[in-house]
Each structure stands twice: as structure tokens, then as C-alpha cells.
Length: 369
Image (cartoon, rainbow, N blue to C red):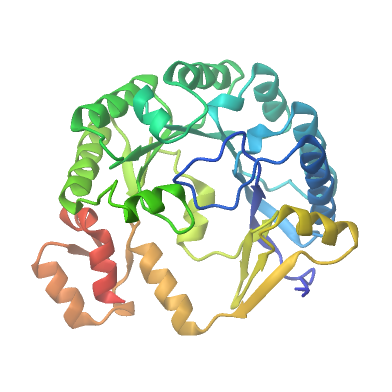
């Protein structure tokens, strides 16, 4: 299956999926694998070939996600970063993010990323409690996470985001408060706080189905409310349900997703959306590599989106942001009812979630869709 991109179809946002991890986290549902040295090396060559076929890109944002992009060797990262500079027009690039696992960070890698123009780091700390890190299957401890943060600061990075998770099995309010306070003390420019969800094909879902773990909606709302209070008091804008930023440091790449912008995804399992077209690369790094070496497209599926599908996505994603959505896209009786219950607020032609609404954002979205 092949999806053609004409030179006139310029896309401004690029996602690149790196599937390799040193350890497989039991809660993660993204496509990932451990891989050996040969497999990783061939993947890097295949990715360079896919970049070569992406001349219709004029990116303003690039996001390296995974998996663990920093699991690659420094020399492998250099090959890929060089290819991006050689094959793409980066003259309008504003934000280049890479996800980093604290267990795979070094001063040499940080210096290389800085040299090639990566200007934003998303550091997957998840927790500052070592017991919870062990539960999550992370390869780092709290001390390594802090050292990784310092390495990036020393390398000159002035835009660092820290990821945290809440509502973990057995996690106490004290542990969550301490993780938030520790993060605030480090003064990152951006903080993401994600509620644990039990995803298909994960070890955590299997344990949930066996009754080892449970979900408590009130507890989850309490953790979210604690994050909102502490981070807003510390000067962070709560600009999306899971994201907080110092003024001027919102994620440009993620905001493009939430606003429904076109984007291209490279690497195994990556999605792309352009207009009413959406396609996905095959979620198998062996077959992804084989196809690219055979000059075949790695696309495994494609669909034509309907206006109603686009509208639904726009509402679901837009409601999560502080800007909200245009009011007339919703049924007005529903809007009025949610406003009366204090879950939505009107601001000129738009509606957005109130603080109370943010605590039950999924329920509000389900009500209006």
C-alpha cells in the first residue's frame, strides 16, 4: 500500500517513532521491542531511507518518541540527525523534541542533541519514588533521573519537560505530593502528569483483570486536583488536562495535534493525517525495515476520514485544552446544561472546561459526543 504526497501538500509537523527500549514497561501500550544491535542498526538505515522520501515536509515541529529514542547509541543518533539536516528543509523549524529515558542519558548524547538543533527534552521520570519506579518496571532510579535532568541543563537545554504518572497501584497521596514538589523544585519549563490507564496487551491490564489492581475514580480526581493546585501555585499554566507549562513553553507539537493540524509519522507503527486521509506504518520493525530496503512503502493501512469523524476528534481533543472549542460545534441545550452544572464556561464564542469539569473531562466529552 502506498500513500503519495505531492510537493504541494506541505506538512508542518513530523513525528518519528523509535521502537526500541532497554526494558519493556508493563503499563506501556505503544509499539516497542528490545531489539539487538543488528536490528537497531538496520532500523536506523531504514529510517534514513524513509526520511529521504519525505521531501514534502517543511516542519515547524519535530517530535522523536517511542519507545526510547535515547536508547540508540550516540553514533546512531548522529546518523539520523545528520540525515534530517541533509534531507529536509529545517529553515522554519521552531521546536524539536526528543523523549529521553533517564536510564539512557549521557553527557555525550546531550551534547550531540544540542549540536544538531534538538531544543526540547521530554524526560520520562514518571515518579521520584523508587518503590513506584520498580513497580512501573523503569530501568532508572530517582537519583539517576535527577542526574539526567542536570546533564541536560549542563548541556544548555532551556526547555525541559518532566513526565509524571499518578493513580498508580498502591500510590499514596503523600508519594504523589512529594513527586510534584520534587519536580517543582527542579524548575523544569514543562510538566506532564498522566493518569495510569490499563491498556490492551499490557501486563498491567492482565493484573487488573485478575483483580490485583483496581480503579477508583474519586482517587484519580483527587490526584489530578492536587496536581492542578500545586502546579498552578508554582506558576505553571494548566493548558491541557495532562500538561502544565511556564509562560512561553507550551508544547508546540502537541498543540498542533490538539488543534487538528496535519502531521506525518515516520517509523514503525507511526500514524499520519493529512486532510481527510489517515494512514499508519506497519507496527513491526522487521517488516518496516524489509520494505524500505526493498523500496516499498511501509504503510499497512489507510482510511478516508468523514467530516463527522473530524468533528468528533476536534471536540474530544479541543475540550481537553484551556482554549476549549467553538460553542456552535455542540448542541446548545447540552452546552447550557453543562454550564448550569458548572462543568463548562462560556468565553465569547468558545466553551471550555471549568476546574470542576477538568476533574471529569472524559465524562463531559462522552456527554457531548
